[in-house]
Length: 451
Ligand code: PHE
Image (cartoon, rainbow, N blue to C red; front, side, top):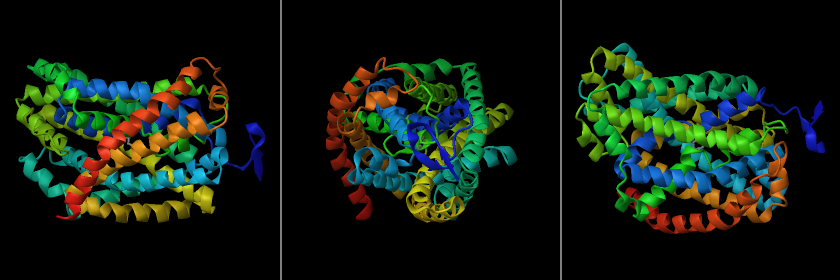
């Protein structure tokens, strides 16, 4: 039986968010994840502190926000998953961009789930056995190999179970509980960190800009990639979620809420991580930061804090698990909705087949952390930036009257600036960044392949 929705498009009972808070919780849940806590803090340490943070904030506002609003607009307007939505507004050729999103989603979710698996393991260990005695050796032992694969499978199992429940009864139900919980945990830990002696050394490391650093292209590329990854942009995740929106929401306001919450949690993550590490004199771990830093330096700090550390450590890793799960839901929904809409598969079949594909693809990352690292770089410094570039061009130049579409439920205030940024700022900026990131990313891929 068909249900008739605004715009006169007949849709066979497409699922819909049951409340605007439900949508916001899910969209913020998508944005806030390992990107804000794990990736943000390790990159901030690796790329020199506040200068990186400032660039990342700048890119979030100037490039991220306009593309976020573009994704919301396209998804809500077309009420289809990205392949269909792009086809709806741009004709058959643009469907290929939706295809690129699916490929990107497969790539990201397959290694994201491996890292999420580490967090599940750390949370469980914090509860049952406490922090490891030798965190470095522990991380080396669990981050690659059978164990990493097992926890990756476990995490994909959770993700599949929730997404199988559908949008309003699966993803929304989990997000409305998970997101408030995550905010509470992160705020609580940041407050606790502020009480530690010598917390100020951590703050000054985190908040003092070394501007020299911000001028390096490597930092610019990383900050741009991070802005996209953290906001879940450039691969249709937000677009897919927006396709389940009713017509009356205020999209510009929602884009602001999502971006502020996302930046807020990343900023708070820095306020918890750096004071804790510096208070315990572990700054050397920050200096040599790699993608494992959070899983080595922090457990060491938690172990030194005794009983309090065990509680804080547990809360910290639970926050990571919760953030990772709600982000994975959105990554997975892109894949599932694509086959449900394009191939007319039933949702359970889509979940099962895509779940197996992701699990198998992720096995490379689970068995070799160097593969994981390169997958992350290729996804962020290439695919998301390319997806974002194409989205900006599409919405700014190809789509007819995006302003009217975005204004529905809101009014046109500020949308002239939005279109200007999409047309004249985002494309040249993203081309410039890609121009610089492609050779180094390709070199890293080559180095991995040639051993
Ligand atoms: N934004 C998520 C995070 O910060 C990751 C993500 C990227 C989710 C792309 C969906 C799409 O962890």
